[in-house]
Amino acid sequence: MIKTIYKNLGIIDYKEAWDYQEELFAQKLQEKRNAQIPKNHLLICEHPPVFTLGKSGDDSNLLITQNLLDQKGIQYYKINRGGDITFHGPGQIVGYPILDLEQFKLGVKEYIHAMEEVIIKTLADYHIKSERLEGATGVWLDTDKISARKICAIGVKASRHITMHGFAFNVNTDLSFYNLINPCGFTDKGVTSLAKELGHDLEMAEVQQKVKHYFSQVFGMEME
Image 1 (cartoon, rainbow, N blue to C red):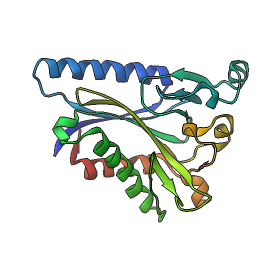
Image 2 (image 1 turned 90 degrees about the vertical axis):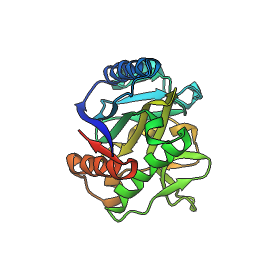
Image 3 (image 1 turned 135 degrees about the vertical axis):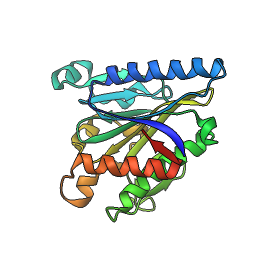
Image 4 (image 1 turned 60 degrees about the vertical axis):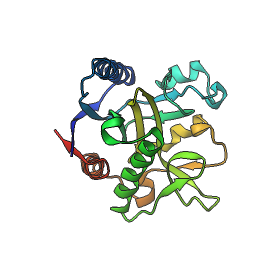
């Protein structure tokens, strides 16, 4: 089992969490340069409403003006992960694993696959069958139907096998925010949440515990 420091940051401003990630990321890179074995971290949090655009993203996938963003109190950041535009907000479990993939013997592709597996297993506990969609990261429902919809977005950055950014899992998320963007650049696919699929809100702490449990199981982590 690989020791991993687990930290629930609660509801935290996006930029504050991003700065904290960058700090840990830089620290791990330095440790690797010094031939040390970096400690692994799993940060869990929620954010006030924010749109983030990845490196390969297109500004035109944000469908409202800066003025409207300001009026609605939504932040907007262009950030250094892969992927296009996504939303973070209350009722969503956001996870930032800062991991040394060498310790887990994983490449970036396998790492993303393992993160998807964590969410797939969590959803199975709620009797929801989810899966991967060819050519698109994240976790999806009904991939073979016109009603295909994403329940968890994934976007990562990795350097020298150290990771940052991560996943955004819709639990009790207000999905109306997704009408203001083309989520992940898609115009032909929907977005959903655990609450929408089940017809009722869930206890966030309970779902967070399940995510933590399956991270331990899938990655072989011992949480501290």
